[in-house]
Length: 330
Image (cartoon, rainbow, N blue to C red):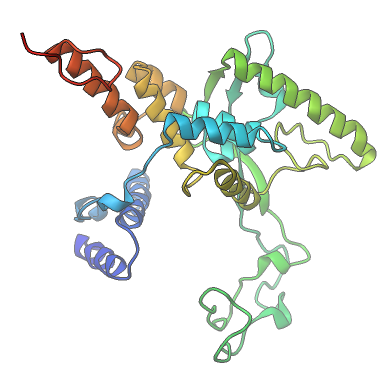
């Protein structure tokens, strides 16, 4: 395994039309995996760390966090929906999707008005529980390629199964280990505590009361899991459905399409706008590496206008609202 192997891969991916952000993300994932292999002494060095990635992202792919007016419209739209508080908390605290979906009432401290982040919800791959995984799926194995044109798949058609294929574990009657699973957060730094702003705490109290009514209405159909955000029968929310709801909220708020993870970028940028100390920001966001401050903190138009206003006041004696022009000369 040599750095050149990955450089050729990155060039091929870039030529396919995928964004520079995709290449950069793949490089970070591969590098982190190989770092773990070095730590466990599986390999002696990490060649991926030497591979040249090129620009991490094109200008068009730069993450654009929500501006204040956009964030307010998104919050208003979210609060009109069931479980909308989940997206408000993502914008305020910057928690990852799995962390938000993994919130439980038992981790809320009502006296301190805080919540502990300890677990996250992930969808994991099912494992076979049968003695012969190759024979288990039976007719589920794909033996011939799809006809042209294929009317079944909207994405590129999957290839036929290889000889001895042991996939399709989700069809196994004795499957185990998959589905939505509660796991520990990514790192020690990820174990953190959030203090609720007063208005956000009021929203949480209202959400708790609404969920209590739902639980009483569902009766025996309610599946107790103590999830703060759940389906109407108490079951946890699927990440795919969660992303779909986010996109619907953006559309209702009249905000351009953004990833759900961009809410985390927005939270970090707002902390910078509020001039929160870097060490405190790292604690709130659950980071151990200071480099994450540069990756997630962005300069928005609002911040640029505020700086321009301060420059105007300093150099020309103007106001600090970012809108005033130069003062009249003496």
